[in-house]
Image 1 (tube, rainbow, N blue to C red):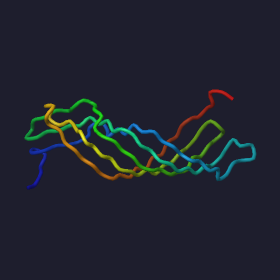
Image 2 (image 1 turned 120 degrees about the vertical axis):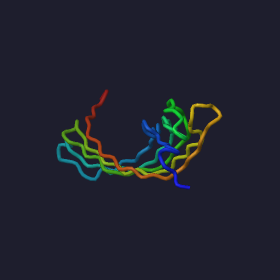
Image 3 (image 1 turned 90 degrees about the vertical axis):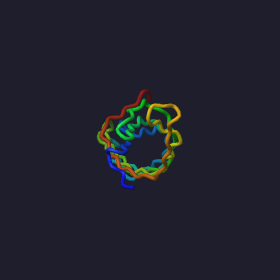
Length: 135
């Protein structure tokens, strides 16, 4: 059977939000003599709950459901953290892991649920500012 959009649409429209706790280990690779600039390598693990909002249409009927704790995810990450002038940073991270969605809301009827599981990889680049709250 060919699944076409007029038969079934299934997507996590507002993200597959993994709310996780991360634990990372950092190793300093280089720093300037005044320590205003530095490069750190890091690696670690993450685990937490997955909170999607799933849009399901079966034969054109369905709904965009509410945010809902649908399962869990876990994995590992590694990357580089560049500190610039003590306050700015550029961070690149490669993450990979497993997601197990045990309770996905579908049509809006409480009896209609789905499940899904998969492996993933993700590459992030972040630019930001960092500061200490106390000495």
